[in-house]
Image (cartoon, rainbow, N blue to C red; front, top):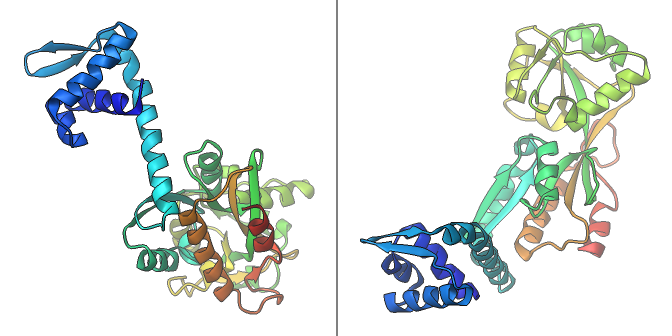
Amino acid sequence: MTITQLRAFVYAAEHGSFTSAASRLGVSQPTISALIRKLEEHHELPLFIRTGRKLALTAAGSELLGWARQIVETAELADEALVELRGIQRGSISLGVLRNANFYFLPDMVERFHRRRPNVNLRLFGQNSFEVVEGVRNGQLEAGIVVLPVPDEELEVFPLVQDEVLWASIHPERVAAPVSIEQIVSNPVVLYDASYSWNDPTRRQLSERAQERGLRLQPRLEVEYLEAALELVKRGLGDTMVSRAVTQNVNFPPEIHVASFETPLYDTIAVIRRRNSVYSPAIRELIDIVNDILKERAYGNGRPGRTNLVQGGREGEDERA
């Protein structure tokens, strides 16, 4: 059983004819017939019922098809990886990103990468860091950029930058000074990332702080998107958490006031990958672009209330990459 035979079988099954499979592979129809006949002879089982113009799978063919597709798809991915090693000129790469990536690096990252590699298809996934972790762990994603903390079993984690988390309210008196967790739970709260709830890293940090004081953080309203939460805050329906990067965006509502936490709270943005894995050249280049963008925006390094680079994050990653 060879890759060529399996590829001929898969294409014939998908297109319903040897002629279409031959056209897909750029060979003659007799070549496809011979490849599949050898496959059938090897296993002494018919794979197709040849009736009329349309091929139909036998029970053996149906059993083989799923396995054959996996093998062919894996071989094609291997081809793409080797193409990338020759210069990252074409192919497709997938990266998981945190929910608020747009506020940190996403538009600039896409633009810079596209200008360098216009023929490489870029696919970005992720509604939440928790979802990205699952994608990296099960192999659907080669790497991801997430907010910590995340469950790191089977993963390597490389911190890049910290961004302060602030508390936001339409009522200036509630955020006139650094806020305590007691103040937060005493007023209505609006939280986003409803689908992932307390699996969301930032929400987990808030919940843990409340638990340490014997309190429970119970949101009055939960929505899926940050933008919706900010709109509800603007209408006076509750207060919410927000990263400093979001508040510096031109679209952040000017009516909303923010303050630091009494004990400052930070989101740490990090790269994750499966343990003992190695980045492909394209993913490495993409992560380097993200790192450059974060460095450019980490002005005022070391001063409170700013977005700060995590010292040593890239060095550790480079040693193991």
